[in-house]
Length: 376
Picture 1 (cartoon, rainbow, N blue to C red):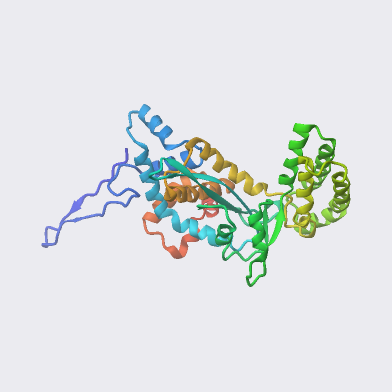
Picture 2: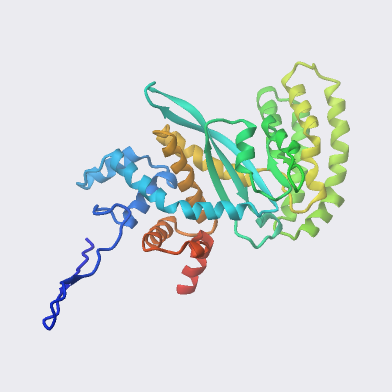
């Protein structure tokens, strides 16, 4: 138990009023939870994928009665205070040279209908570790009620970079037609998405064409493994020397296989997909900063899917927005090797104590890691 003592003082020589220090501010004014407890609740759900009802059962076993509504209220209050931190992260992301982008379902309870409606979490990631970049990764999640290109354009508004690494979803094509000062965005497509198609064909049909396709894609990844973390110029040189000949022979080989199989087959569909996205799939040959796939963002999306599997749905759209906010902060903590409970506890307390907005950069997860190491 934390006890705060606030003695009262009065001056015997004057008639001044009795003076007492102000009570410390908290996320829940006059409530029982400390910032550390609220941080633990948030990380348990959005970092460790334990929904509120399970947390309530855990506390009940310890003789503490807390219902889901109470836990949700605490989290909503915390998100109100944390929003300036996430807004600053979003601004930092807009200065990246290139970003990864993906989306996944976000079931949200539809009040009055006793069913859920399907929204989407959009993930945007900046991660330069593949080419030895010194800037810390940034992960941002956004909630939107749909999956159309209008939402991708809204979340990328103000982003000055040239490249967007994404899958072959048609909505992203509209990014290449946007009129902006820097020119339209350039799409870099994902080899992992193309590879998955041929993995399915090999597993279901035992196709030798699919097997050979996977072998050639594996050669590209083997080359990438040797230059992982190297400077862009070194990666580019290796790609032009080793990867370019594989890519050059890959297209005519695929076209030859396409002419040998039924046009209506699934394998033909997969080959046409690969050929149709050839320009995006081969763009990595011209810039050492680009990656072969969108794994940096897909690895983050996977965590959202785990929480969704256990929690089933968000109670309302505000809850989905808070979900995206907290998932963003916790993901950034993990990419910077920062304990998210400690980070959220300290950051909430700093914000409540009046941390100036002009110094909000000090509250970024990457800076919290630096401060912790110096203190140690």
